[in-house]
Image 1 (tube, one colour):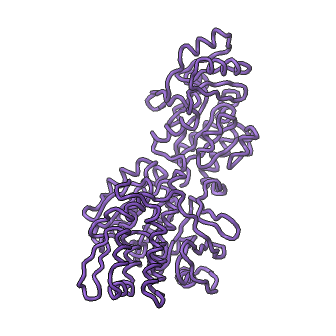
Image 2 (tube, rainbow, N blue to C red):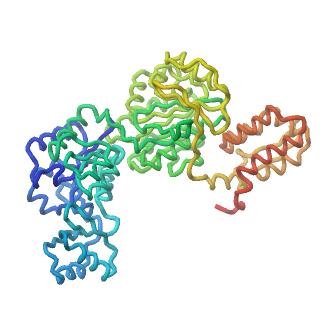
Image 3 (cartoon, rainbow, N blue to C red):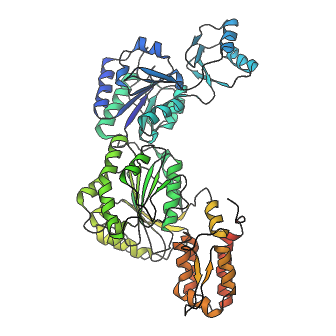
Length: 572
């Protein structure tokens, strides 16, 4: 299920001339029986709302006074979400003959043409207040308070995400909360400007439109509506930007070791989080403990995370989590994941999040023999992202669920062909050239593979860069120049020291590590920079005739990415 909540305006959306029809009440009852949440979002004050509508008990929360008051029908308690209006402001409006004038817990309301008087009073008193217009109504609220902020407070209490919510309304003051929802709906009688910014417009007006919407949500979860504005940017191809849907995507990222798989994954997750989607990343080898913005990492090499603490973090829909399984023995990691998956699926079924499940080392976590019941649970995840170097080692039933494939690195045609043979997909048999760093081949179900340039993360991970450039990464992650006979033990605790030592060690030692691929392996596995590792690996395969030239090329690659822009060791 994609949508777990419906947020609706009251006047001229749910109600017509202040009254809600019996047919619309019946539809609201059907929605609650489907297990979904109901939130009423209105500009009315609570006393006035109780006077005109006696079925507030149908709603899990009511946001009143245009976002300024939160009401809980179950226990009939309410809380203001902002400060009460200054008494001197209300008195000034009365002195100037503003009538009608209504004062709620937070809101001050009148009607046009008193808007000029209201604006002058705000200016004269030096108040930080805003004026909201709605079909002739003039509402005054503290800055930053609107239906969107009120809905956010209601959803937070319910543990539901706006990314799992449908919003429906009709007027100017509904715009903010509508666009904050995953799917924005306008009833047929809505203002043209509101319809223009919505994902769906009902065929009927007012309560009839809401009833129509509810029936569609219950019937197929709005299956024919795909809000394009939420699609996640992946990269740029010949036809422009390529974006991926945040729901229903089942994507496998694959390619050789150190080819850029984690770079693609990291870029997607950064954008997913920025768009308000929660993800749970299963990280068997601790590869994502650095550089994933704002995610909580649970577990380390000394301690395994518990299912309870993972689920506790996921209760806050604003918080994503990386599940580091280094503290779980290698053989037990697939069992941990398969045991945890039903509990994760149950949370998603109840609350609509996490929105994305990400599984690194998918060939290890979901090998042949992975339970069919677990495969069904994967299908029910909002979006599934899997990462592996060995796609054919992943359980075939799991591969059958996929609808997209992103290939990086060398011989992408072989990866496409292997996937086609295992899944029976009809993919082109043509050969594809090796992909340079920063490029990928994307196949989506029903389409042809397209070559893209990955759009890098918007925010450079400066802290990560400084740490590896000039900090001390620790003995376990340092590079050791030992030479062919193990006679040396020169430790490079960061990239600056690595470059200095690499220039200074003897030729035999330099070539020993170069020929073994030690430099690219260290950069990929310890520095966690697959792009740089791929560039250095090319030099390892083809160093040229001059050792000095190979050293210079490796040093310049590192300096270009790290040492030149990095701050001093103490910078943080």
